[in-house]
Amino acid sequence: MPYSHTTFGQLKTELSLRLYDANKVFWVDQELGLYIIEALRTFGLCSGFWRERGTFDTAPAAAFYDLRTALPTLLEPTVTDQDIILQLQYHLLETKATVSQSSWLGTEMFTFEDIWQGVQNRLNQFLADTGIVVQRSLQPVIAPPEGRQPLDQSIIDVRRVVWIGAPYFSYFVWLAREDELGMTMYSQLWSVNSDIPISWSIMAPPPLQLQLSPVPITDGQVELLTVNSVNLTPWAGPTVLGIPDALSPAIKWGALADLMGNDGVSRDPVRAEYAERRYREYVELARMLPVVIHGEINGVPLVTNALKDLDHFALNWENAQAAPTDLILAAPNVVAFYPVPDGIYSATCDVVRNAPIPASDGDYLQVGREQLDMILDYAEHLALYKCAGTEWHATDRNAENFIRQSLSYNERVAASARYAFTARGQSAVEKTLRSRRRPGATGVGALEGNQGQEAAPGQGLGVRRG
Image 1: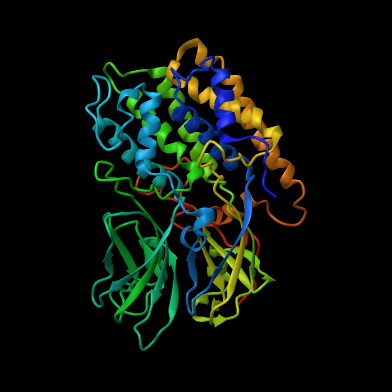
Image 2: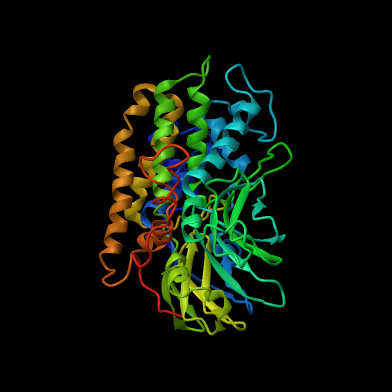
C-alpha cells in the first residue's frame, strides 16, 4: 500500500519556508523540486529503501539480460544530460538561461560549452572510475595469423572475454585474463602455433586492441563484457546518461568541481573542493550499489552467485542449456542465468529500484513520515550551495544528519538478513572477485589485479560445479 500523507507540492512549500523564501523568488518552484528529487535519490542510494518485484521472460539460448531493459519501470535510467545542465544552471545562478538546456549565450563566468563539456567529461570519468554499467557485445574475429583484435573506440574497460567457435562448432570457451609473461610461461609458442584461444590480455597491446592467446586457428567471435563511454549532444536533444538515476548527482558534482576549479572569474576553491569530495563519495557508493536481492524462475527460488565464481567453477557454462537454477550477477545492470535457459521462462527479480519520482505537485512522496525531516535537511543544504559562505556551511550538520539516518535505515534492514548477503554486499561480489584496480600501484607494470590476474574464486557464495 503506497504512502499517502505528504504531496510533492507540500514538501516544496515546506522547503521554501525553511529557506525564508515563501514566495519562491530566490529559489523558484522548479528549483526546489530538483533539490527534493536529488535528496530522494540519494536516500535510496544510501538506504536501499525502495524495493520492488519485477518479472520478465527469458529467451531460448540467451544467457545475459540487461535489467535496464528487462525491468524498465524499475531500473531504466531516465536522467539526461539536459537534466544535469538544468541543475548546474541553478547552482551557478544562471537562472535567466533555464528556459533552455540546449543553448544559451552564457556569461563571463560560464559558457554553454563549459557546462556541457564538464558534464561529458565527468560522465565518462565516472564510468571509468566505477565500471558501474556493463555492455555485452559480439565481435567477429579474423583468423590466422592475427592474434590482436581491434576494439571499438567507445570501450573504456574490458571486463570479460569468451571465445565463440565457428557456427559448425557452436561452443563457448571462457578466456582467462592474463598478461604476456603468463602466456609465455604457459606456452612459449603461443604466438606461433595457432589453436583455440584460452586467455586474453590488454597489457602489451596498444589501446583499443585485445591480445588473444594462442592465435586463433579458425574464424569465430568474441563475446565481450565492457564498460563503454557515452557521447552527449545536448544541443541536439536530451541524451540519457545511462547510469543508475541514484548516481546521477555524481555527474553534477564532478562538473561543478571542474567549473569552479578553473582559473579566472569562476574560480571558487572552497566549493570546488566540496564538489570534488561529493563526487568521490558517489564513486564509493557506486561500488556498493544495491540492486538484486532475490530471484526466481517460474516461481522457484534461484541461488544467487557472482559471474566470476561461475566462470571458474563451471568452465564454459554457456554451452549448457536447461532450466536455470542459479541467478548470476555480472554487473549492477546485467544478470545471467545458469544453466542457459533452454526455453521461455518467467524470471522474477526483487530489486532495489529507482526512487519513485513525483510527476506533479499532487503526487504523494513514497517515504515514511519519519524520513521527511531528513529529506528536507538535505534539500536545504543543496539549495544553499549557490549562496556559499556562512549560510551554506551552517547546513553541514543537515547533510551529515541525512547521510547518517539513511545509512542507519540500511543497517536496520541488514540486521534481518541472517544467512544471506545484504543487497549492497551481494551486488558488489562480482567487483570484488574481478578486480579493476590494484591499490597503490603505478605504471604499466601495475595494472589492475594481482600481476594481471583476477581475484581468486570462491570468495563469495560458491556455485555448484557444472
